[in-house]
Length: 233
Image: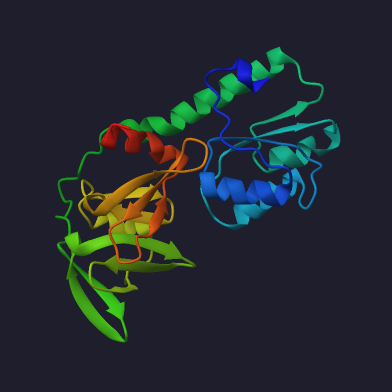
């Protein structure tokens, strides 16, 4: 039925709840249709597990034959709860609501950011902790930064170590936004150190960076449009 709606692009399908969690984390879709009864982990469990990870969540629409879970679904902030068999008109209403919500969410991002008069200049030097030593590196030598369990790792041309910043947001706020791009919730990359754009899963991409390991960094669905504009893909 979704093929009848050109504004919807199906980027992935999962056959169970555990696969759904994995796909949503990797692909970062804007909208997810979920069944309730699924092997491994039910639809409500999928949303709960993702909420525990403290990540940006997509909009969820439950599609099920069971009406008794509706209250719990809306308690988990579901956008809608559709009962089978689906009616096209009802589905169209839901998709239009989702389209407006996604558009509203993107609107602030599309507006040009105004720098406050008191904003400080981007930092040209960063501290990197490695081998129990504190190194000072030029910001333009940073190839990418990634965060895992609250710890930021900086990879530069000559070394890999940890940053004293607590979040990717704080790190990016102190760097040149024209040079450093938040391509994924867990990755900040130096645009000048992207070596290759690698086609990946369902019209998405990864970036092969210019470090010694040629690390491949995922590009979120939200940032794919900017990637295409940046490199004229």
